Amino acid sequence: MTPETYRCSAASALDAEPMAGTAPEDTAWLLVEYAGSWGRNAVADSRLPDGVREVLEGAVGVRVQLIRRHGGWAGPGVHVFAARLGATGRVWGTVLERVDQVTDLDLGALARGGDPGLPAHEGPLWLLCTNGRRDRCCAEIGRPVAAALAERWPAATWETTHLGGHRFSGTLLALPSGVTLGRLDPDTAVEACAEIAAGGFPTANARGRAGLPAAAQVAELHVRTALGLDGLHDLDDVSVGLGTGETVSLTVAGREHRLTVASTPGEPRRQSCADLKLKGAPVHTVTGWDRP
Image (tube, rainbow, N blue to C red; front, top):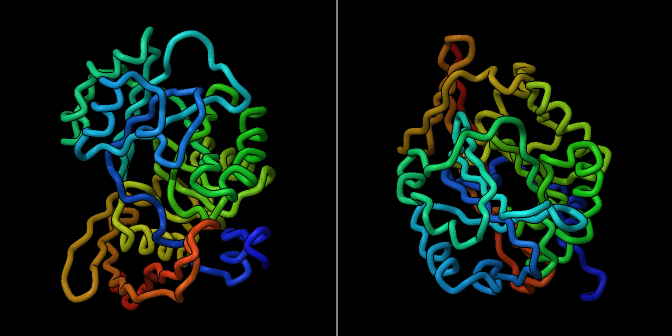
């Protein structure tokens, strides 16, 4: 591929780069509707009021994302969602009259695992990474996926600024489950989201469950694949202990499974279309499984 035609997602797929363990590990999320243009550093580059930008950029322990409807306006007001992710997930949301009301939210409580001061949100949310300023694959692949999902779930579908893993575009974060998917096209995205909405866990395109450490993401996918567990709630509990390697405990039907996950440097590659420096992302492998 020439520099003009190089696509990090095509190169990653051609090499069959593993996706397991690449979902975001952040546990606290804030999503703020902003229909203006998105820069590479979305919040910093936005035209949000100075006070709002300062609060969002200074939110310690909270991952801030800008969101917008595919194709335009989402109606009056500013949609805002907050989420806590991990082995289980929870989402809050509302429509503010003005964007500066975001500064009234208790982001410290959200970071600590508490209620940010919003009502609970019912139903799924589909977040599609579509920010072409971060990576061209996100826009070229992500926007058609967003269009397909918006046709099926118009109220649940949002474009967002950055989910990481450009080379796995199209990439999606499902809330409240935290299930993160990659290498989606419009058809597979609709199928996967329908499965999640029905209480399933689509392992075929799964990167992992956001809010969990990479080792736990890999262990969950390994156990699900080996045991044929395709329900969102088939795993009762997930915990991670650090030591020689990482030990992950998963509870399935009341029985504990302990897995050891090792991390090794991956093959050096371009992590995004515009990144000319070759870097190796960690590759996580299950090296032991103590079954009950």
